[in-house]
Image (cartoon, rainbow, N blue to C red; front, side, top):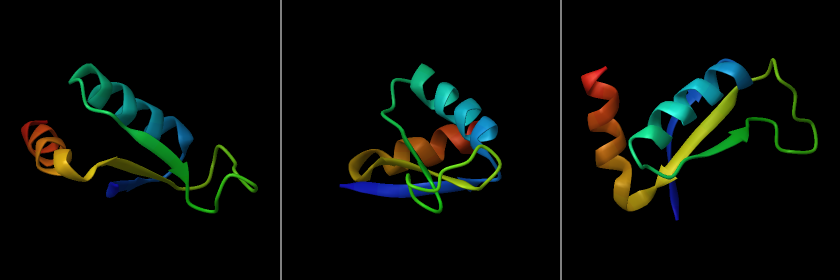
Length: 64
């Protein structure tokens, strides 16, 4: 099960956050806010992490 960590403004910023969290060995899933059928680069994207690792992700974001 995944927990929503944050919402980004577009796909590019979501990719930057994904790469940062991947570098910290944290599994990340990026999902377009409107779903995959209508996905676009300029729409908001949600970032999800595993439920048990949410506290780790929050701690990483806090240190930035």
